[in-house]
Amino acid sequence: MSPDTAPRPRMTRQRREILDALDTRDFRSAQSWHERLRSDGSTVGLATVYRALQALVDSGDVDSVVSESGETLYRRCEAGEEHHHHLRCRVCGKAVEIDVPEFEEFARHIGDAHGYGDIRHTIELTGVCPECAAAGRG
Image (tube, rainbow, N blue to C red):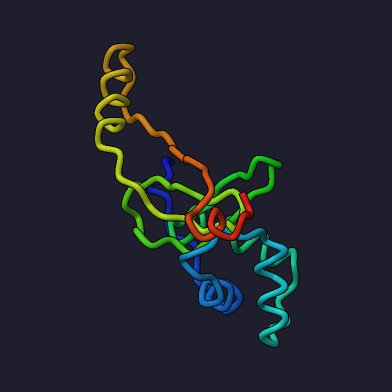
């Protein structure tokens, strides 16, 4: 079963609590989101946070990226199920969604040239956001 046809996971109380705690501005680690939940009085455990974040990524409710150190970072998805890419600050984690229509066309062309269909890809660009650059953090 492809990700596009997979059934959406059941929205448990813990998943709802975790999804509600996420924001759409910054990518953070599972541990960081867990700390935020705990500071807000949640009793959800770290293992539950990891499992819920992965289920929410699979359902398209949460975006994930891998940092330069190899750590997976998460944030609430702004675009829903629509395909999108990110420009992420390497310093603070702030991210903006970017539209790259030329790459979408390029990916289709490469797939067609090699006889592949259902082409999927991810683009993530990283840099230093204006706020971090102005503060001398990058």
